[in-house]
Image (cartoon, rainbow, N blue to C red; front, top):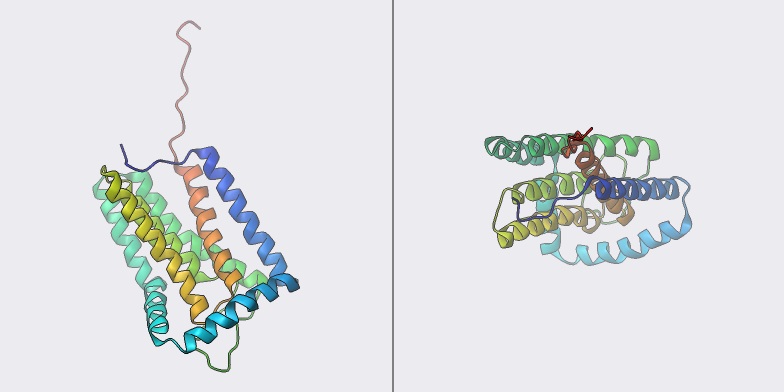
Length: 222
């Protein structure tokens, strides 16, 4: 047995629905230029960017997180994790990690095309990206791959302390990749939140699909 609790299909379905609803609502708010959201984004992003311009170590750390959050790096993290899971004969987990690492970024890319949000523009830019802003692909991929892989590997551990430590550390790393996008000024905060929600929604949907279905039992007296 794993040292970590395993979500039920019903709980996963609720999480997938809730996170999907958040992405849809944020996307509609962005597309319609809903002023409260735009003001909130600016109220967070502007002081963070101003601080980052004066804080070289934060920029360096964010650029490192940016690098490991790119698909060309996270892909191999997912591949290595899938190999470990296959060796451990955890077939469903291996399939889930592979699908999560591939499907979540694709979903994000499609939403980007639909919403078409422009990225922040600064007089002193710390980074640049050619794609649309909403949702953040780094936030999606970072949480999907690093948190997903870490939690999947943690499910192999029987020692609860190590399992929780791995799950928490990997999730923190995944979230940090999203935060780095705000620090570098290449995404609005709502882009990052939406990216996280896409990752969680896809992961939860995969849990619904891949959890073993209960076997039908026959009534011996029937």
